[in-house]
Length: 352
Image (cartoon, rainbow, N blue to C red):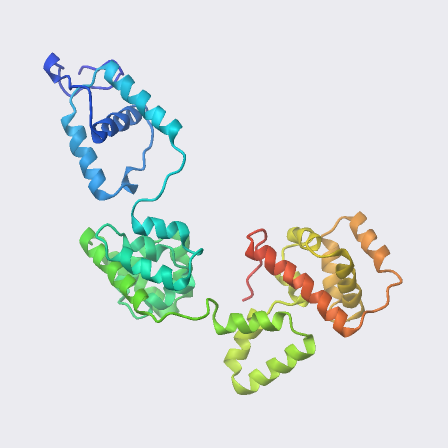
């Protein structure tokens, strides 16, 4: 078997007539670049291209024959020059643009653009479904057949699929797992139809005025409420709706929850985000409260001895602050934790 000048094996002897003219179309030049990179062992994510582009590239490569070294060098030089001149790249299609700016535009505009993107032939419905959280996917798949749920889980990253499966009731999870064995022969067109059906269900849901659910909204309000008000409201909720009250309690994060919900390694970062005087007020108030004294010790255990001694020196001789000032100081520490979590700088432990 013969090889060309680049060391690439040739399927048959090369005749002079096999040489192709200097390429002039973008797809011809792309075929040369792809062939060169593959011959060098590069791993190219060609499957990420639209299917039409993949087909055109393969068809063009089948017609290329032999390209002389001068032509290859000219195409590579042009390709490198284009890379150097490139400033910004934009996603192709409305669905790609939406994925770029989603979260920065209003919910109504985003919903309308999603419907427009989903109506195009090139839109991949599974990209939209794959962007959902496990909590959003669970109700979407709850009423579907086990086979449909198994297909949906198969398209998700393994970690996300495991989260969804863990949230399902035991009997439902077993049925979906068994149905996975029946999805081996599913055709691409069928997969796409299932995805479009699920996306249609998403679009059929009424728009929500609030991004967060009632439990999270109530929990966020009670987080920064005075402790007396918080307990009074929770007691009233338990009398009227015990289930809702229990969910709100789990959504609440207060100063007392710091040892259980914030990792020791993250505590120094939290303390740096709080104004020093406010932080000392919170520590003095907590140390004077038998129910919160353990929080102070947990915080000190995560600090260096020098920092602990510095805090103790500042706390010494300080009078216990009034309940109003104590609550404000506790709320400031809690707010710092929430802000760092929202920024992705710390990860709070989930309460079971």
